[in-house]
Image 1 (spheres, one colour):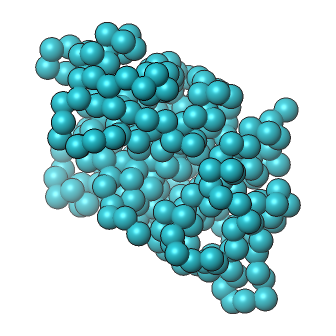
Image 2 (cartoon, rainbow, N blue to C red; image 1 turned 90 degrees about the vertical axis):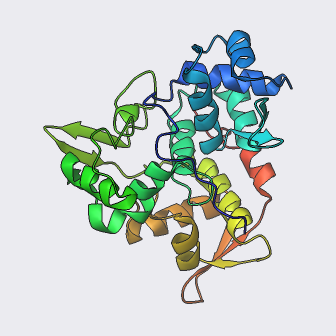
Length: 279
């Protein structure tokens, strides 16, 4: 398993992930070009200033969402983004990420313990025991304050606003805030999302347990958060496994305790088909 390389607390410079700019970055990645932030800005139309701008944030969002991988040295000023299997199918089938499944999968990836964004990871995976599915904004602030050893205001950044803004990820609407109370919505269990959830599951198994042919459901959650990150309870977990199994992506051995997940496809094959059931 690779070493975690999550995006740091303030990678976003308070910018939300606007889908039009994500689209521009995916198109740039598909073109095979490389450039510094200024060059990428000129090529994509993503605004950038001399000292700061949206290009670094959007590049990082795309990376954290599992849409692109960056080739070459992390420290190099020249960035060469390349589409992942997920990024490629999004650009082909849902280029502006309007579909719920696109937004949910990007959200799951942002919460990843390996390669997501640290604030997302701390909120949706590491902190779920203490936060629960609804919590006062101030509780989230204090939770993050303890994690980072700082009581700065604004520590939450664009985390909540991302899911309330039409230009960003309001379709999945994972978080919403009313009168200081933040409510977290679990990922919906819809038939048309089954192929997407299946591809994500296979990717998790491949990333966290590359040499294993089957993985216990409990181990996959404690390592990769496959149940915790979407916010599923035990009943939902069983429904999701049934749904994905029906799609022929994997098999669940229910004779073992805990149950074992046995993949039937490669992640690459599964990613290509995530929109096949969309109406």
